[in-house]
Length: 108
Length: 113
Image (tube, rainbow over all chains, first blue to last red; front, side, top):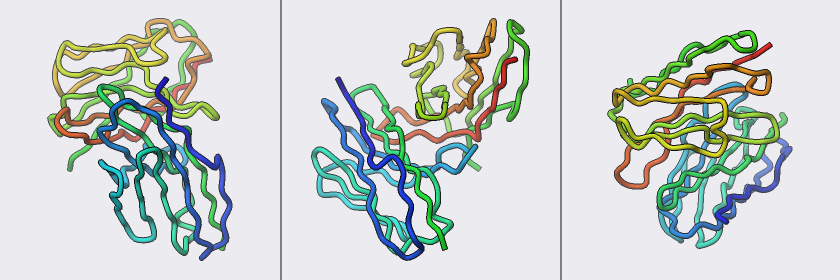
């Protein structure tokens, strides 16, 4: 069965303490892997799309990477405003599946 | 501005009273989808549509109906709401060409009492 698993479920960081979130997937034909940021009570906001193993994308303090079985979202020197839930999703042939998310809290 | 607009943002209703949550997108996207989000359960797909007059069930379709008569609109209908449908609902749309992701609306918080 196709699955998308994110870890850890929650992450508490000090401001400036870099860390990584993991998204592992088992799908038959990956057409894209997506990272979203979601603030409480709001709709997920698109961050990155990755299409093939080895690909990397960056935006400010965030960097996403992709291998054949997993993706990492690296947060470098986070600030309190990076606090949010980060969701990954995969698109295979016809189906779009979300992971459960990683809740990140960055304290000053 | 490219966006997905859903209304209302907040809704409190009583058990059994039919309601409709509207969703509209201005990006000419083929795919539209409804999700519900509950604490600890993540985003779960209710229904999706691949184009006008083409809809299919997602993971949790029971108690919901949808229609896609126009490309831009995809309303969610609860014919007889129950308290277990209290949730945060999101509409989303995406293009059908290429591996592009969904653009989400701002959400509708529904409470059924």
